[in-house]
Image (tube, rainbow, N blue to C red):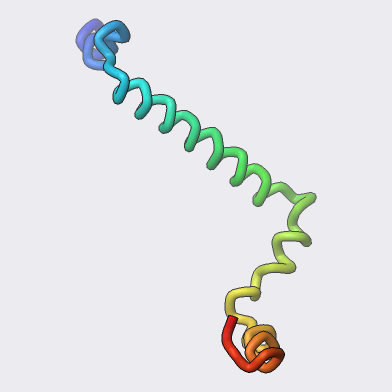
Length: 73
């Protein structure tokens, strides 16, 4: 068991600025992704998210934008 714990031992005092920045950035991205997944997969937001499901492939909306001023937006 001590070999296992020694493998994961971290020398906090020897960490450089880049190590701390990488650690903080990793934790921040993890928390941000968790929050976004929680928001998207929440049942109360299902209708709001589902209403945008076909937004990328909606050709009528793209054609309306092109026809409105003659150029592609």
